[in-house]
Image (cartoon, rainbow, N blue to C red; front, side, top):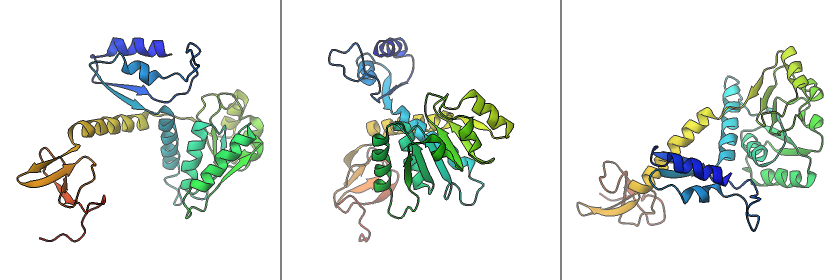
Length: 276
């Protein structure tokens, strides 16, 4: 994978403005001497000379896409996701991140994973980390059918067809079924869903990808062009996220300020009562 990524990067370097590379270390590199995780980002950085290289996290993109899709699906419901019961079948990196997001939205989330010990750690983490004002909670189950029964939202993140006919039979006619694993629902289960007029959705990351690209390019541009401090017409100015001292004004761009946001208080905030 590293070799393929380097070859692609070499071929497109200079022909595009930006090259995005997945920074997550997911796959053990069997060719590595010490069996380190495959670092595609590091490999690509060595060969990209002319284009701007920006890293991203693909699993976070998937989790954000799922969260946005589910929220939009229930947007006509006055409560939204709040109060809904969610079942997540396959609680690994992506499943756990989605679980956290939905608990924070007010959905009780029951998770299934074969490894009960790891599942317990994930569930405890979500419940400990969530806001104390969040009433919803995460729960663990060692049975996929039990986790799915009466779920309003059924999410499959496995690469295996764990969601079968029994699981489909256990949910209501208005359940949202979302296949993130691209194969987490069996053919027979899919046919049963269609016979009950329940649509099964295959997660698309298109919208979140577009937003991610714009956000990362904007961050890159700001980091290169807007982070700094200077004296402008005798006044000390700062921009781009640096912490201002008490005598520095926070502006939109320290090189050519057009907007003044406020006067720093020396502790990361604005002076709320500045003199004239």
